[in-house]
Image 1 (cartoon, helix red, strand yellow):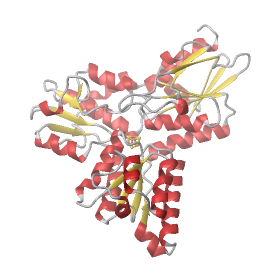
Image 2 (tube, protein in one colour):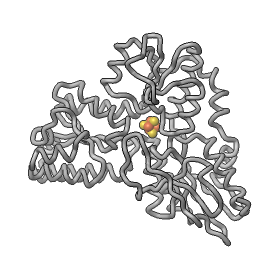
Image 3 (spheres, helix red, strand yellow):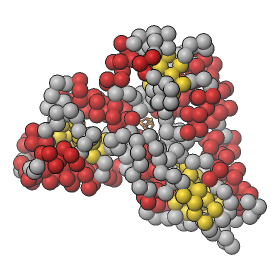
Image 4 (tube, protein in one colour):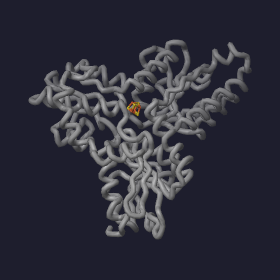
Length: 401
Ligand code: SF4
């Protein structure tokens, strides 16, 4: 198992820079994150794009390709939630076990398997180890920190309540950690509405079957709400909205106080919490707030994969204040009159592994005056994509399409 790279960092540095770097973005950064073209003024967020975990995961994937040129190399799924990066890895000959025709069961000891930045479930790791594959582990340190806290909850008899998306790879991996203890349990809550249902059960009890049916797929095997909601510890998927995670923590804490009383040691027996939002996610959310607070923006553009949790949360944050367009790449800027983008809050629930189709908005770019655009990118978006979007804005600014 390779956990700290494959001693090929220098060998792949040029290739990584060619694929993901942008000199235009460097220039904008050096210009106090401001850039003007025609009647468009762009304000880049102070923190955006590749986080340390993504940077490292992509680096290790390139190193693995270079170190094992003749061996089959697989990823367990998307290395990060950015289609351009994943396609680039496919074109380098790295195969995805989630692609049609691939099978985890067919792996042999000759194969190399890269574990993504979100990590993999306990069960999958055991299987890959039993198959004898060479593993390249790119699990982010911030995800490992969540696992550490969840493991402590299980060890001490607390059910881990995870604020996250039940189908997200990271949340599935985090929830699986509790299996390392025989009586460990987990429950995933998506939002305040689901947390409120949990709080109602903590306060008043309720019908077990109704509760389990409402949280199908979100609880650990054998979960029994009467027993497993008596002592809980809160954790988050690292990319959730911090304000929501804090609110959910407050709701559950208050439910425990209502049920068992506010005496300090009693509360500590029933409720624990650790903030496990990663610093990169937090920095990007803070930078969007700062942009909105300090610049008089006409609109925001948020760049990133449509299945990227942290990107969608940046778009949600911005969308509360100004018209916001979450776009995947420069092709989404169809013209100065038309933009293709993710529907955001309007998007209906989708099947696992799929995202809502793009929608098209007309007359998105105001005319006739200086237009101030805030720009940010999720933690899985390379600078090269940000640079292409800046380049695409140039002709739109002069109405040349
Ligand atoms: S978003 Fe945070 S947890 Fe996820 S890879 Fe980046 S640094 Fe790690």
